[in-house]
Image 1 (spheres, rainbow, N blue to C red):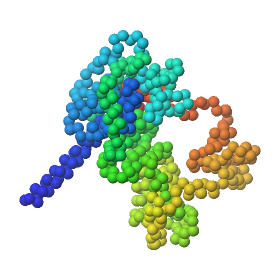
Image 2 (image 1 turned 30 degrees about the horizontal axis):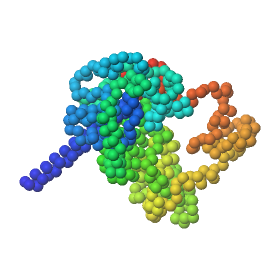
Image 3 (image 1 turned 90 degrees about the vertical axis):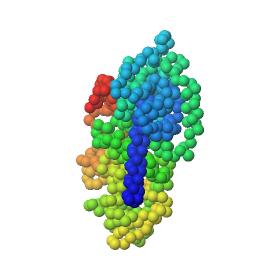
Image 4 (image 1 turned 30 degrees about the vertical axis):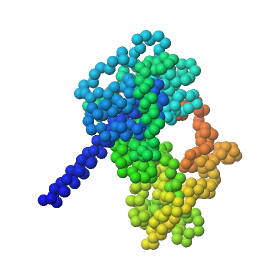
Length: 483
């Protein structure tokens, strides 16, 4: 009987532990939503004076253990009122009308309206500059000569952003505030703000590593939640991936574990421009003196960089660290964000070999197993291979091969008389091309008059309520479904 009782107690403890973490993740998700709304869309002066990286970790610690909706609301109010006093949190079945008088000065003389405009998003929400491709700017508030605005769209003062951050808990936030030469209105309490700033100064990432990890995930979530332009073409449930990443933070024991959590978090976005760094990447970028590739569904050694009697070009790999190559690559590919199958395979071929310097990778070939040291940085292997490639080659009469990753203008000008007469030109664009800006115009039938090669979203509302003006010529009203 005692054994059954102990068993029941253990099951109870396990279930309550799971529920506790589930509640933590819900709390963190609620905080993360408000964090992004306030950081990127609330135009108070205090928003621009906070250390947001530390605040993400500090807020995660404060919100994590809330047990009731009222505790959640109280904690959110405590966290955000020093930064955004006009943001309200409510536990209710119905949403009360927001009091616009509370954010309207009695005398409007000397006041103007301020709000955020985002061209993409500026790193760290920096002020707008004409030289920046991506930027974020508070209209009428950030320092800039004249009344310049990045674009003409703007939110309306009367429209308050309202969203349910968790079932039965609502957030109300104005996205437009009045401002004068001194401050935005209404101004946050100076004492509360200073107290928060002092707490953030004392918050130490070296002793709060668990919350630093949660803060990292919260920041990554919000950048993509509000500014990633491809959610309409990528099949991903971003909120579900966010929950997975938060849960993985609780089992991450090392910086390497956390790096993988962030990689797995962003991989489903299928964007080859995404890469995650934590300062340790170089420590894990060592490879053995071989390269491999998938050929006819077999993992084949394609290069041997140093004399090594064990390996030959053409050898077929049958196991890696005791796993089949297919299984081993499955885990590797789960860490890679790639827009094409080609880029995914290229990156997987490289990353699958990488690890710490002098660490071992176990490789089986034709029934023989070898422990192989990782001794060379992958970059140097790739550069060695790239340097061996020909920048151009005449394949046969009238057919030319051009490697436009290596090609330079001098070579192009020298070959141009031959290229003009060519029947076919094969362009190798694997990697980042360097010659496309003077090669492509020669292929065009008319001059290029386009100034907008970069199609940058113009954003004033959270959660992708506003897309590029090219796709949505009118500002979407909040609550409208976004196609």
